[in-house]
Amino acid sequence: MAGAVLIFGSLMVVATVMLTPQGLNYVLDGLMRYAGIMLLLMPIFAWPTFLIQAAVPPPGQGRLRAIISLWLGGAVVVSAVMNLLASMLGYSPNPLHFDAAGHQLIPYDPRGGFLLGTFAICMLLSTGVWGVISRVVPIGFALKGACVTGLLLFGAVAALGYVLWPQQSASAFAQPVFPRVQEQISAVPRPAHVADIDGYWEPEDGCEWMISDWRELRVQWKPGLPSSRHPHVIASDEEGKWEAAPGYAWVDPERQGDFRVRPVSVR
Image (cartoon, rainbow, N blue to C red; front, side):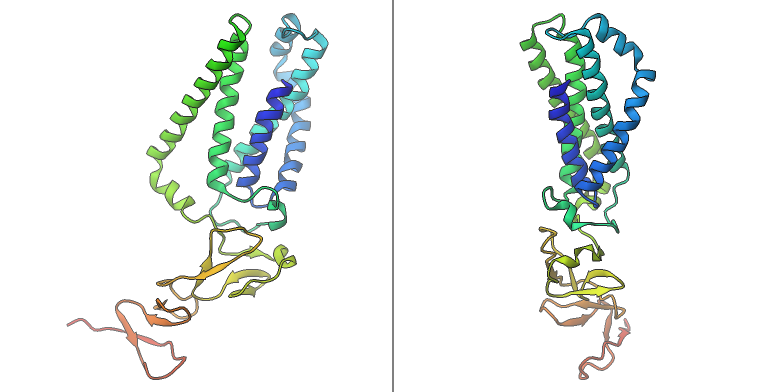
């Protein structure tokens, strides 16, 4: 059980942090809360498992040690699974509570978090099943079976998700960046072309966040990006320049700073 806690618990914590905008401290706080609840609930709802562990303890362990290991380790693993699933279900491509300080050790990467978390859960399920079988089959055979079964299960789940939700997955993960970043990041120098708007940092008009290290918060000019201040005006191919959107023309093209446009009549 200690090995399962160390391996799968760590993987699921990392995956949860990658999925959670608030970062590591927020995830660890939730993990401790869930673990405390599970310590109370496990003896009530999982008492048959405790009886089996006491009747047939794992090789090399006494009954008391087996029960305590199951109780503590099980609470941590179950809480890690609950924390991970809650982060998966609560994922949003546009979160409003991002904390850059919480991602200094583990970056915010929702796509990687989903894949790593799914892999950890699949391997945990496979290891649990083969762990029971290992009492009647050679341990080497059980380890190989757990690895193969876990990988096959992970591949099936990943493929099923891709087939059933290809458009949603693509749109959700095509650009895992935020339209708004909270002022918690004010400890780092403000990058170029980023404005402080109502306590949030946002790219200047015509720019967007780059997929990069959030501690740097770099932005880039995006040709074709609609202006947030001027209707029917889009960013030009030349940085800092604007042009009328398709179907529109400048009202006064000779006047600098005049972003008024008019529909182009079709004859």
